[in-house]
Length: 104
Image 1: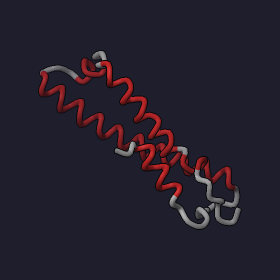
Image 2: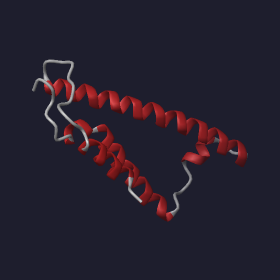
Image 3: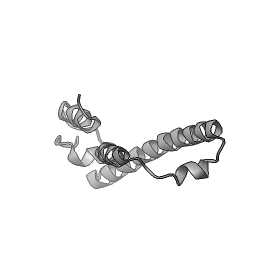
Image 4: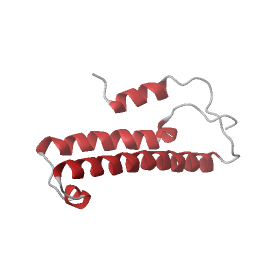
């Protein structure tokens, strides 16, 4: 099975041509791209967290705060680390993309 990080690297490696650019300054373009990617990631994560916390709290007859403070099982820490690495790669993909920027 391919990890999420491997899949993202494959998509980046499969890119053809130059990356499209809207701004004259490549560094500004990269920072803007990273910021927008972070915004999307955060929005999706917040929506998922909110839904899950409400559902689980309702099923357990507890509060979302109690869920947030619960200890993690052993394998959850490694799974979180893999998810973090995939997130970092998605957000910073513009920095690891070997293709030259268009017009740059």
